Image 1 (cartoon, rainbow, N blue to C red):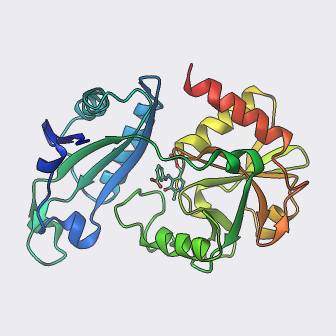
Image 2 (cartoon, helix red, strand yellow):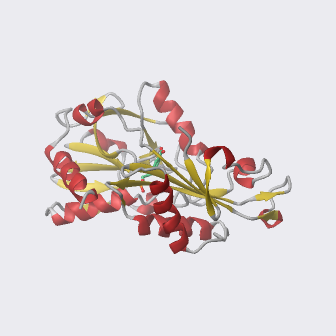
Length: 285
Ligand code: PXG
């Protein structure tokens, strides 16, 4: 079935949704994106995703040619045009077509693209039994090289780590920063429970500040679970009581084995289960 795509100012059939081979998004990964979800017809934290998109664009000196409200409307309209109440939305803004050469000043017309699709979820078994993950040798990009807070179209750093995970038979891989501290997974943020407290790396550990991460931190606060942003090393994960990942696609997913070490009792723990249930309630509120 052909999907309906939003391109710049209108909805078009998938076949007509094309970009130039001179687009710097294609040539250099020069652009920004967001991945969002809608639940029962309502987009989860749309404003937060738009704020992050515009912040990413600001950081790379990319002027999005539409106002936030227009992009918000495009997201809602694209979901509706595809009859998706529970769906996944990919928002992409490319630098636009230019000459061959890095100079972003020689590009014109950034392309604003909204794709709505069904979500491809991890199998239920992963949520019930928990994930096995491994640490990738590929480090998260240092913020002095390229800030991980920018959700750019250049995801090769994460893809290299994802490949390492897949080669080890894991669907996610843990990434460390240049100091050897835990940063995040390739498309998910990481949390542990230690001494009954919820701990997660701070933004300056070199992470994307996930929207799901933020929501889970709020839910922990509401549930009376103390949550702290602290630098973590692998030892903290290996010896944690519980571990889970958060992300738009994965939501909240337990981790039961890291680098061959069982985490806690090697089954999804009580705090992970509590926050998962609270998250499911939140997205449908
Ligand atoms: N870290 C990284 C590097 C990410 O790319 C997250 C954390 C989680 O952030 P959110 O805001 O989603 O809680 C991400 C998000 C995909 C996909 O198709 C990836 C993400 C989001 C949606 C879909 O693999 N990554």
